[in-house]
Structure formats: C-alpha cells, structure tokens
Amino acid sequence: MKEIKAFIKPNRIQRVIEALSDNGFESMTLSQAEGTGAFKSKGARPSLDFHVTDSPVVKLELVCQNEEAQAAIETIIANAKTDGPGDGIIYIANIEDAFQIKTGDSLKRHDL
Image 1 (cartoon, rainbow, N blue to C red):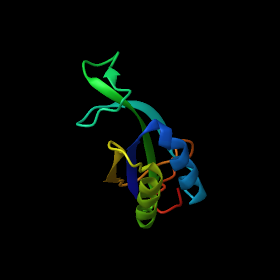
Image 2 (cartoon, rainbow, N blue to C red; image 1 turned 90 degrees about the vertical axis):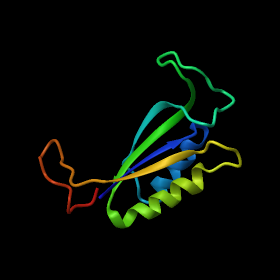
Image 3 (cartoon, helix red, strand yellow; image 1 turned 120 degrees about the vertical axis):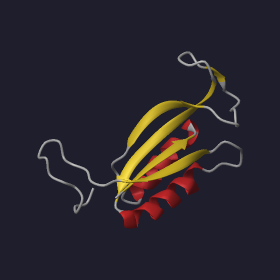
Image 4 (cartoon, rainbow, N blue to C red; image 1 turned 180 degrees about the vertical axis):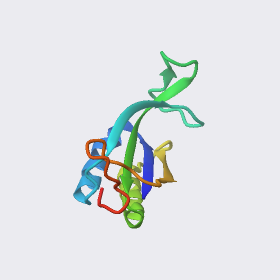
C-alpha cells in the first residue's frame, strides 16, 4: 500500500477532491496547514502560531493499493496544477499495513 500526502493550494482543493472521487478515491483526510518555502503566495503573512512567513495550504492524505498510486498522483497533478508558481508537492510513502479500529482486521489484502 502507498500513502500519498499532497500539499495543495486551497483554491484548487475542491477540484482535486472531486476528480479523485470520480476516479474511485473516496477516502481521504484533509487538513488546513501553513507552508513555508521559497515560494511565498500573495496572501503570505507572518504566522500567528510560528515565527515564519507562511502560505496557506491544504494537506490531502490518502492510502491506496500500490497499483492505484500512479493514477491518484496523476489525478492530483492534473487538477492542482496552475499557471503560477507554488502549486505544492506530493510525497509518497510505503505503508506496511493498516487496521480497522472496530474489528482489528488488517487491510493489507483488502480494498481500502
């Protein structure tokens, strides 16, 4: 299994979520976040919580089977990309296993 973490501009997240859902990726987690880096958006401001200048981002997280990861990545890129700088970044990590809290069942060999 793969874990995909994508940091996306807030004005593109709805488009990304809809495209992922349309392609069968319905389970994901979204978090509001602050990003730092070389690119500073027009709305960048000193953070209230940290001593950095930040740009607002949304962190999207999803876990999928290995063979589905490339389709998810391509969907995110196609729908998060803009003509401007600072569109975000995607990280991919291997997941050894996952478990249902209610049942304790492993999801390693089941659909997510």
